[in-house]
Image (cartoon, rainbow, N blue to C red):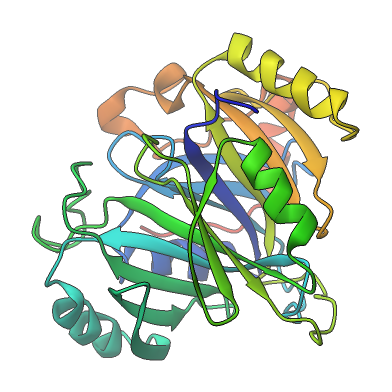
Length: 311
């Protein structure tokens, strides 16, 4: 069994426009944009990162905003919902704030005894806020969000699958333990994790396969402390038959990728070096930071391809 994974690192999704995406995450949700860069494989498209003050592992939602991208079709074989942890007793405040901002899909409920508020992002993305008493991670109090309501980071992610057996076995191998079951949802927890250490499997045998597009999660990343830990994880996964990429330098972390039995793309990312490697902590997310292989494209990207983002 793998013991190096501590929980979630980040979740990366697809959007249909940079300005609307930035306005939603820094506006109603009040998160901090911690990096404005470009897609390594398609530099004419932004890669935007939102999280807590430092972009701590377990707090960062990231997006590839492809201009005009067709909305995805929800289904099986994807991350169906990403949930953020908020302080106990804060859901009423969030309900009023999100309703006032015209956020769609607001629905209060509960899962495994915890109160939650589901909602939709600008491209139909599935989100929830979950009251998480005792979460000691500091929240980001940007854009009018008070400390007693601030998002601490991720609470959990829900994988929507037609058959959860093989993915459940994979999660156990990755250090997660089954904690409880409620209806079609089984909860897995990485005990002693980084605060973002819950994964729910929702099994829907008759669900049609998801079609990826705007509002879809592209991949979900799990955190390890450093490259040595990542190498151990990669070897363990490869030894059990998973086809894992070599480590790839993503500037702010090193990444490996593999496709799960249920069809979801998993990444394992290092906590180091972090988002302050090329910007001062107080200035995170302000400048357009380009990977060195794309630095020569700065002028054409800014004048021709990248949509201006107004903060």
